[in-house]
Length: 413
Image (cartoon, rainbow, N blue to C red; front, top):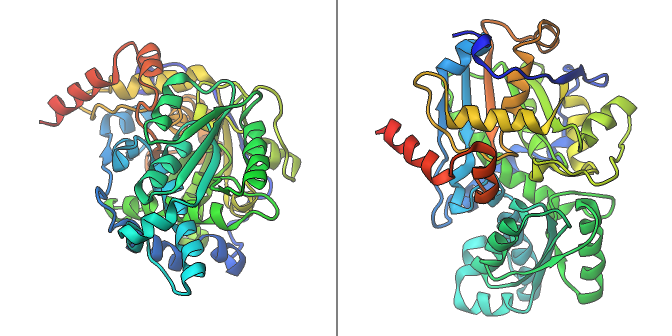
Protein backbone atom coordinates (compact mmCIF):
# COMPACT_ATOMS: atom_id res chain seq x y z
CA UNK A 1 0.00 0.00 0.00
CA UNK A 2 1.38 3.41 -0.94
CA UNK A 3 0.41 7.04 -0.62
CA UNK A 4 -1.30 6.65 -4.01
CA UNK A 5 -4.10 4.89 -2.09
CA UNK A 6 -4.73 8.00 0.00
CA UNK A 7 -7.00 10.94 -0.84
CA UNK A 8 -5.00 13.73 -2.49
CA UNK A 9 -4.64 16.48 0.12
CA UNK A 10 -2.51 19.56 0.67
CA UNK A 11 -1.33 21.18 3.89
CA UNK A 12 0.58 24.26 4.96
CA UNK A 13 3.42 23.28 7.28
CA UNK A 14 6.13 25.44 8.81
CA UNK A 15 8.76 25.00 11.50
CA UNK A 16 8.11 26.85 14.74
CA UNK A 17 10.67 29.70 14.76
CA UNK A 18 10.67 29.75 18.59
CA UNK A 19 11.13 26.01 19.09
CA UNK A 20 14.05 25.05 21.31
CA UNK A 21 14.26 21.40 22.30
CA UNK A 22 17.03 22.10 24.79
CA UNK A 23 14.84 24.44 26.86
CA UNK A 24 14.10 22.73 30.20
CA UNK A 25 10.46 22.20 31.14
CA UNK A 26 11.04 24.21 34.30
CA UNK A 27 9.08 25.16 37.39
CA UNK A 28 6.78 27.65 35.65
CA UNK A 29 5.45 25.02 33.26
CA UNK A 30 5.33 22.37 35.98
CA UNK A 31 3.02 24.68 37.91
CA UNK A 32 0.67 24.62 34.92
CA UNK A 33 0.93 20.95 34.00
CA UNK A 34 3.00 18.69 36.21
CA UNK A 35 3.22 15.09 37.35
CA UNK A 36 1.80 15.81 40.82
CA UNK A 37 -1.33 17.47 39.43
CA UNK A 38 -1.77 14.59 37.00
CA UNK A 39 -1.48 12.08 39.84
CA UNK A 40 -4.29 13.90 41.68
CA UNK A 41 -6.48 13.94 38.56
CA UNK A 42 -5.83 10.26 38.02
CA UNK A 43 -6.75 9.38 41.62
CA UNK A 44 -9.97 11.38 41.43
CA UNK A 45 -11.16 10.54 37.91
CA UNK A 46 -10.38 6.83 38.16
CA UNK A 47 -12.91 6.63 41.03
CA UNK A 48 -15.74 8.11 38.99
CA UNK A 49 -18.46 5.71 37.94
CA UNK A 50 -17.95 4.72 34.31
CA UNK A 51 -14.23 5.42 34.19
CA UNK A 52 -12.20 3.15 31.91
CA UNK A 53 -9.17 3.82 29.69
CA UNK A 54 -10.21 4.47 26.11
CA UNK A 55 -8.81 2.24 23.35
CA UNK A 56 -5.60 2.85 21.42
CA UNK A 57 -6.01 1.57 17.87
CA UNK A 58 -3.11 0.36 15.74
CA UNK A 59 -3.49 1.14 12.02
CA UNK A 60 -0.74 -0.82 10.21
CA UNK A 61 -2.21 -0.41 6.72
CA UNK A 62 -2.40 3.36 7.16
CA UNK A 63 1.20 3.31 8.40
CA UNK A 64 2.30 1.55 5.20
CA UNK A 65 0.38 4.07 3.09
CA UNK A 66 2.03 6.95 4.94
CA UNK A 67 5.45 5.34 4.57
CA UNK A 68 6.08 5.13 8.32
CA UNK A 69 6.70 2.33 10.82
CA UNK A 70 3.49 2.60 12.85
CA UNK A 71 0.34 4.65 13.43
CA UNK A 72 -1.69 4.67 16.63
CA UNK A 73 -4.99 6.48 17.25
CA UNK A 74 -6.19 7.15 20.81
CA UNK A 75 -9.98 6.95 20.44
CA UNK A 76 -11.79 9.22 22.91
CA UNK A 77 -15.25 8.62 21.44
CA UNK A 78 -16.39 6.47 24.37
CA UNK A 79 -15.11 8.61 27.24
CA UNK A 80 -17.72 8.51 30.05
CA UNK A 81 -20.41 8.17 27.40
CA UNK A 82 -20.00 11.85 26.43
CA UNK A 83 -18.39 11.26 23.06
CA UNK A 84 -15.16 13.18 23.62
CA UNK A 85 -12.03 13.68 25.71
CA UNK A 86 -13.63 16.84 27.14
CA UNK A 87 -15.28 14.67 29.80
CA UNK A 88 -11.86 14.59 31.48
CA UNK A 89 -11.58 18.38 31.56
CA UNK A 90 -14.78 20.35 32.08
CA UNK A 91 -16.43 17.96 34.52
CA UNK A 92 -13.21 17.58 36.48
CA UNK A 93 -12.84 21.35 36.70
CA UNK A 94 -16.45 21.62 37.96
CA UNK A 95 -15.67 19.08 40.67
CA UNK A 96 -12.45 20.84 41.67
CA UNK A 97 -14.22 24.20 41.91
CA UNK A 98 -17.02 22.75 44.04
CA UNK A 99 -14.45 21.13 46.33
CA UNK A 100 -12.67 24.47 46.76
CA UNK A 101 -15.85 26.48 47.36
CA UNK A 102 -17.48 24.03 49.76
CA UNK A 103 -14.16 23.29 51.43
CA UNK A 104 -13.77 26.99 52.26
CA UNK A 105 -17.27 27.12 53.74
CA UNK A 106 -16.81 23.93 55.76
CA UNK A 107 -13.21 24.57 56.78
CA UNK A 108 -11.82 21.27 55.50
CA UNK A 109 -10.40 19.71 52.36
CA UNK A 110 -12.80 17.79 50.12
CA UNK A 111 -12.31 15.25 47.34
CA UNK A 112 -14.62 14.79 44.38
CA UNK A 113 -16.15 11.65 45.91
CA UNK A 114 -17.27 13.73 48.90
CA UNK A 115 -19.47 15.75 46.54
CA UNK A 116 -21.69 12.72 45.93
CA UNK A 117 -22.98 12.66 49.52
CA UNK A 118 -26.57 13.99 49.85
CA UNK A 119 -25.65 16.80 52.23
CA UNK A 120 -22.95 18.01 49.82
CA UNK A 121 -25.27 17.86 46.82
CA UNK A 122 -27.71 20.04 48.75
CA UNK A 123 -24.98 22.67 49.21
CA UNK A 124 -24.00 22.40 45.55
CA UNK A 125 -27.52 23.43 44.51
CA UNK A 126 -26.69 26.99 45.55
CA UNK A 127 -23.76 27.21 43.12
CA UNK A 128 -24.08 27.94 39.38
CA UNK A 129 -21.33 27.15 36.89
CA UNK A 130 -21.17 28.56 33.38
CA UNK A 131 -19.03 28.59 30.25
CA UNK A 132 -18.97 29.23 26.52
CA UNK A 133 -18.56 26.29 24.19
CA UNK A 134 -18.43 25.01 20.63
CA UNK A 135 -20.12 21.86 21.93
CA UNK A 136 -17.95 19.29 23.70
CA UNK A 137 -16.64 21.38 26.59
CA UNK A 138 -20.13 22.66 27.41
CA UNK A 139 -21.49 19.14 27.35
CA UNK A 140 -18.81 18.08 29.84
CA UNK A 141 -19.48 21.02 32.15
CA UNK A 142 -23.23 20.36 32.03
CA UNK A 143 -22.66 16.67 32.74
CA UNK A 144 -20.39 17.52 35.67
CA UNK A 145 -22.95 19.99 37.05
CA UNK A 146 -25.68 17.37 36.84
CA UNK A 147 -23.41 14.75 38.41
CA UNK A 148 -22.64 16.89 41.45
CA UNK A 149 -25.93 18.77 41.76
CA UNK A 150 -25.07 22.38 40.92
CA UNK A 151 -26.82 24.71 38.50
CA UNK A 152 -25.45 25.30 35.00
CA UNK A 153 -25.77 27.91 32.23
CA UNK A 154 -23.97 27.26 28.92
CA UNK A 155 -23.38 29.83 26.15
CA UNK A 156 -23.13 28.80 22.51
CA UNK A 157 -22.36 31.07 19.59
CA UNK A 158 -24.29 31.64 16.39
CA UNK A 159 -23.04 28.72 14.30
CA UNK A 160 -23.16 25.93 16.89
CA UNK A 161 -25.55 23.29 15.55
CA UNK A 162 -28.91 22.44 17.09
CA UNK A 163 -27.64 18.89 17.60
CA UNK A 164 -24.83 20.11 19.82
CA UNK A 165 -27.21 22.45 21.66
CA UNK A 166 -29.56 19.55 22.43
CA UNK A 167 -26.65 17.37 23.55
CA UNK A 168 -25.85 19.98 26.22
CA UNK A 169 -29.45 20.64 27.26
CA UNK A 170 -30.08 16.94 27.94
CA UNK A 171 -27.94 17.28 31.09
CA UNK A 172 -30.25 19.92 32.54
CA UNK A 173 -28.25 23.01 31.62
CA UNK A 174 -29.82 26.27 30.50
CA UNK A 175 -28.38 26.92 27.01
CA UNK A 176 -28.07 30.52 25.79
CA UNK A 177 -27.28 31.23 22.13
CA UNK A 178 -25.34 34.43 21.45
CA UNK A 179 -24.48 36.35 18.29
CA UNK A 180 -20.91 36.41 17.01
CA UNK A 181 -18.22 33.72 17.29
CA UNK A 182 -16.82 31.55 20.06
CA UNK A 183 -14.66 34.29 21.55
CA UNK A 184 -17.68 36.62 21.69
CA UNK A 185 -19.57 33.91 23.59
CA UNK A 186 -16.65 33.59 26.03
CA UNK A 187 -16.86 37.31 26.80
CA UNK A 188 -20.64 37.18 27.22
CA UNK A 189 -20.46 34.22 29.60
CA UNK A 190 -17.83 36.02 31.68
CA UNK A 191 -19.79 39.28 31.79
CA UNK A 192 -23.03 37.58 32.82
CA UNK A 193 -21.20 35.52 35.43
CA UNK A 194 -20.00 38.69 37.12
CA UNK A 195 -23.54 40.09 37.19
CA UNK A 196 -25.22 36.91 38.46
CA UNK A 197 -22.50 35.50 40.72
CA UNK A 198 -21.78 32.44 38.59
CA UNK A 199 -18.50 30.52 38.41
CA UNK A 200 -16.90 30.34 34.97
CA UNK A 201 -15.56 26.91 33.97
CA UNK A 202 -13.62 27.85 30.86
CA UNK A 203 -11.10 25.80 28.91
CA UNK A 204 -9.31 28.97 27.85
CA UNK A 205 -7.21 31.14 30.16
CA UNK A 206 -6.50 34.86 30.18
CA UNK A 207 -4.90 37.31 32.62
CA UNK A 208 -6.63 37.00 35.98
CA UNK A 209 -8.28 33.69 35.11
CA UNK A 210 -5.91 30.73 35.36
CA UNK A 211 -6.93 28.22 38.06
CA UNK A 212 -9.92 26.60 36.35
CA UNK A 213 -8.31 26.22 32.88
CA UNK A 214 -5.33 24.65 34.65
CA UNK A 215 -7.67 22.06 36.20
CA UNK A 216 -9.18 21.41 32.76
CA UNK A 217 -5.80 20.72 31.17
CA UNK A 218 -4.68 18.58 34.11
CA UNK A 219 -7.73 16.38 33.55
CA UNK A 220 -6.82 16.05 29.87
CA UNK A 221 -3.42 14.67 30.78
CA UNK A 222 -4.98 11.46 32.10
CA UNK A 223 -5.75 10.60 28.47
CA UNK A 224 -2.08 11.10 27.59
CA UNK A 225 -0.94 8.96 30.53
CA UNK A 226 -3.24 6.17 29.32
CA UNK A 227 -1.85 6.36 25.78
CA UNK A 228 1.75 6.27 27.01
CA UNK A 229 0.98 3.15 29.06
CA UNK A 230 -0.78 1.47 26.12
CA UNK A 231 2.06 2.04 23.65
CA UNK A 232 4.79 -0.57 23.40
CA UNK A 233 7.21 1.99 21.97
CA UNK A 234 7.38 5.74 22.48
CA UNK A 235 6.15 7.66 19.42
CA UNK A 236 8.62 9.64 17.33
CA UNK A 237 5.90 12.03 16.11
CA UNK A 238 2.68 13.35 17.63
CA UNK A 239 0.08 15.31 15.64
CA UNK A 240 -2.50 17.08 17.82
CA UNK A 241 -5.33 19.39 16.78
CA UNK A 242 -5.79 22.71 18.55
CA UNK A 243 -8.59 25.14 19.30
CA UNK A 244 -7.53 27.43 22.17
CA UNK A 245 -4.59 25.07 22.74
CA UNK A 246 -5.52 23.29 25.97
CA UNK A 247 -5.46 19.76 24.55
CA UNK A 248 -2.30 20.45 22.56
CA UNK A 249 -0.55 21.85 25.63
CA UNK A 250 -1.62 18.89 27.78
CA UNK A 251 -0.06 16.42 25.33
CA UNK A 252 3.05 18.51 24.70
CA UNK A 253 3.62 19.16 28.40
CA UNK A 254 3.31 15.49 29.31
CA UNK A 255 6.11 14.35 27.01
CA UNK A 256 8.27 17.46 27.49
CA UNK A 257 8.26 17.06 31.29
CA UNK A 258 9.22 13.39 31.08
CA UNK A 259 11.46 13.18 28.03
CA UNK A 260 13.03 16.64 27.82
CA UNK A 261 14.89 17.15 24.56
CA UNK A 262 14.28 13.50 23.60
CA UNK A 263 10.53 14.01 23.43
CA UNK A 264 8.61 13.16 20.21
CA UNK A 265 8.54 15.65 17.35
CA UNK A 266 5.45 17.68 18.13
CA UNK A 267 3.07 19.01 15.46
CA UNK A 268 0.10 21.29 16.21
CA UNK A 269 -2.68 21.25 13.59
CA UNK A 270 -5.40 23.88 13.07
CA UNK A 271 -8.17 24.71 10.59
CA UNK A 272 -7.21 27.33 8.03
CA UNK A 273 -10.11 29.51 9.22
CA UNK A 274 -9.11 29.40 12.91
CA UNK A 275 -5.32 29.18 13.07
CA UNK A 276 -4.62 31.45 16.05
CA UNK A 277 -1.68 29.34 17.29
CA UNK A 278 -0.01 29.27 13.90
CA UNK A 279 -0.51 33.01 13.49
CA UNK A 280 0.88 33.62 16.98
CA UNK A 281 3.96 31.53 16.16
CA UNK A 282 4.55 33.47 12.94
CA UNK A 283 4.15 36.80 14.75
CA UNK A 284 6.23 35.78 17.76
CA UNK A 285 3.43 36.96 20.07
CA UNK A 286 -0.16 36.05 20.92
CA UNK A 287 -2.27 36.93 17.89
CA UNK A 288 -6.04 36.67 17.57
CA UNK A 289 -7.84 35.51 14.45
CA UNK A 290 -10.99 37.56 13.93
CA UNK A 291 -14.13 37.15 11.87
CA UNK A 292 -16.63 34.32 11.65
CA UNK A 293 -14.02 31.56 12.19
CA UNK A 294 -16.59 29.37 10.47
CA UNK A 295 -14.99 25.93 10.14
CA UNK A 296 -16.61 22.49 10.04
CA UNK A 297 -14.19 21.55 12.80
CA UNK A 298 -16.45 23.18 15.39
CA UNK A 299 -14.39 22.17 18.40
CA UNK A 300 -11.40 23.98 16.90
CA UNK A 301 -13.28 27.16 15.90
CA UNK A 302 -11.39 29.45 18.26
CA UNK A 303 -9.73 32.75 17.46
CA UNK A 304 -7.78 33.45 20.66
CA UNK A 305 -5.06 31.34 22.27
CA UNK A 306 -5.25 30.28 25.91
CA UNK A 307 -2.41 32.04 27.75
CA UNK A 308 -1.56 28.96 29.83
CA UNK A 309 -1.44 26.78 26.75
CA UNK A 310 0.88 29.25 25.01
CA UNK A 311 3.34 29.03 27.91
CA UNK A 312 3.94 25.43 26.84
CA UNK A 313 3.29 25.50 23.11
CA UNK A 314 5.32 28.61 22.28
CA UNK A 315 8.60 26.71 22.59
CA UNK A 316 7.39 23.12 22.91
CA UNK A 317 5.83 22.88 19.44
CA UNK A 318 8.23 21.82 16.67
CA UNK A 319 5.99 22.58 13.69
CA UNK A 320 2.55 23.90 12.82
CA UNK A 321 0.23 22.56 10.12
CA UNK A 322 -2.90 24.26 8.78
CA UNK A 323 -5.58 22.25 6.95
CA UNK A 324 -8.84 22.84 5.10
CA UNK A 325 -12.28 21.62 6.07
CA UNK A 326 -12.29 19.32 3.04
CA UNK A 327 -9.13 17.61 4.30
CA UNK A 328 -10.84 16.86 7.61
CA UNK A 329 -13.83 15.34 5.81
CA UNK A 330 -11.53 13.08 3.77
CA UNK A 331 -9.84 11.91 6.97
CA UNK A 332 -13.22 11.15 8.58
CA UNK A 333 -14.19 9.05 5.56
CA UNK A 334 -10.87 7.21 5.54
CA UNK A 335 -11.25 6.19 9.19
CA UNK A 336 -14.86 5.11 8.58
CA UNK A 337 -13.74 3.07 5.54
CA UNK A 338 -10.15 2.18 6.42
CA UNK A 339 -7.41 0.64 4.35
CA UNK A 340 -7.18 -3.17 4.30
CA UNK A 341 -7.86 -4.67 7.74
CA UNK A 342 -7.36 -1.53 9.82
CA UNK A 343 -10.04 -0.94 12.48
CA UNK A 344 -13.16 1.00 11.55
CA UNK A 345 -13.32 4.23 13.59
CA UNK A 346 -16.12 6.75 14.11
CA UNK A 347 -14.27 10.07 14.24
CA UNK A 348 -15.87 13.50 14.44
CA UNK A 349 -14.72 16.43 12.35
CA UNK A 350 -12.61 17.93 15.16
CA UNK A 351 -10.94 14.61 15.93
CA UNK A 352 -9.19 14.14 12.63
CA UNK A 353 -7.16 17.31 12.03
CA UNK A 354 -3.94 15.54 12.98
CA UNK A 355 -4.74 12.60 10.73
CA UNK A 356 -5.56 14.92 7.84
CA UNK A 357 -2.29 16.81 8.25
CA UNK A 358 -0.27 13.58 8.25
CA UNK A 359 -2.15 12.30 5.19
CA UNK A 360 -1.31 15.49 3.32
CA UNK A 361 2.27 15.74 4.57
CA UNK A 362 3.00 12.16 3.48
CA UNK A 363 2.33 13.23 -0.12
CA UNK A 364 4.78 16.14 -0.09
CA UNK A 365 8.55 15.61 -0.09
CA UNK A 366 8.96 19.09 1.34
CA UNK A 367 6.53 18.48 4.22
CA UNK A 368 8.01 15.03 4.95
CA UNK A 369 11.47 16.56 5.22
CA UNK A 370 10.25 19.45 7.38
CA UNK A 371 8.49 17.09 9.80
CA UNK A 372 11.20 14.42 9.70
CA UNK A 373 8.83 11.67 8.58
CA UNK A 374 10.52 8.51 7.32
CA UNK A 375 10.23 4.73 7.30
CA UNK A 376 11.15 4.55 10.99
CA UNK A 377 8.59 7.10 12.22
CA UNK A 378 6.00 6.07 14.81
CA UNK A 379 3.01 8.45 14.73
CA UNK A 380 0.50 9.00 17.55
CA UNK A 381 -2.84 10.74 17.01
CA UNK A 382 -5.38 11.76 19.65
CA UNK A 383 -8.89 11.20 18.28
CA UNK A 384 -10.61 13.73 20.49
CA UNK A 385 -14.26 12.97 19.63
CA UNK A 386 -16.68 10.61 17.96
CA UNK A 387 -19.81 11.78 16.11
CA UNK A 388 -20.82 14.48 18.58
CA UNK A 389 -23.19 15.87 15.93
CA UNK A 390 -24.74 12.72 14.38
CA UNK A 391 -26.66 14.61 11.68
CA UNK A 392 -23.55 16.43 10.47
CA UNK A 393 -21.48 13.24 10.65
CA UNK A 394 -23.91 11.37 8.39
CA UNK A 395 -23.93 14.29 5.96
CA UNK A 396 -20.13 14.43 5.76
CA UNK A 397 -19.34 10.71 5.75
CA UNK A 398 -22.37 9.51 3.78
CA UNK A 399 -23.25 6.97 6.45
CA UNK A 400 -24.65 7.22 9.96
CA UNK A 401 -22.37 6.89 12.93
CA UNK A 402 -24.48 3.95 14.10
CA UNK A 403 -23.88 2.12 10.83
CA UNK A 404 -20.15 2.79 10.97
CA UNK A 405 -20.02 1.65 14.60
CA UNK A 406 -21.88 -1.54 13.68
CA UNK A 407 -19.27 -2.29 11.03
CA UNK A 408 -16.54 -1.59 13.59
CA UNK A 409 -18.09 -4.08 16.01
CA UNK A 410 -18.38 -6.67 13.25
CA UNK A 411 -14.74 -6.27 12.23
CA UNK A 412 -13.59 -6.40 15.87
CA UNK A 413 -15.57 -9.59 16.43
